[in-house]
Amino acid sequence: MKTPSTNEKENTELYESIVERLGSTDLDSGLLKESSKLIAQAYGNGIKWDDVFPYGIKRPDGITARGRVSIDEFTKVKDLLSNRLLRRLDIFPIGIRWPDYLDVHAHFSKGRAPRIG
Image (cartoon, rainbow, N blue to C red):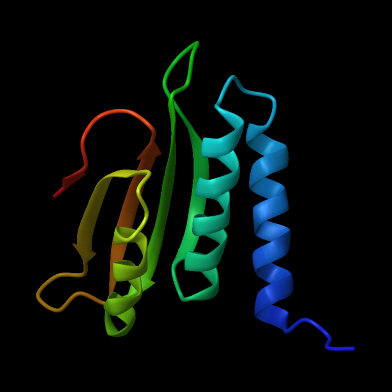
């Protein structure tokens, strides 16, 4: 029997944590599960999420994730681009003159067309 790696365990724990935390909102369950899975996979690939929260007041229609990735691992962000629920991706370099890392803000929703800025 194969034992799960540490990354797989962390990904599963993060996925379950997001679903539990946001499950009490009015979010579409398909959106919640698919976005949570992608966010957990991105975490395993090097994006360290600081916060994940519902997007929208009263009736949330999306999920926003905010985190950071080392400038050396910038290519890890491209994995987010393949998801059909990604509606907006903002990337901010942090560090004067030579950035050390990038702030990543990803918004997932079933609505509106994608915007990458």
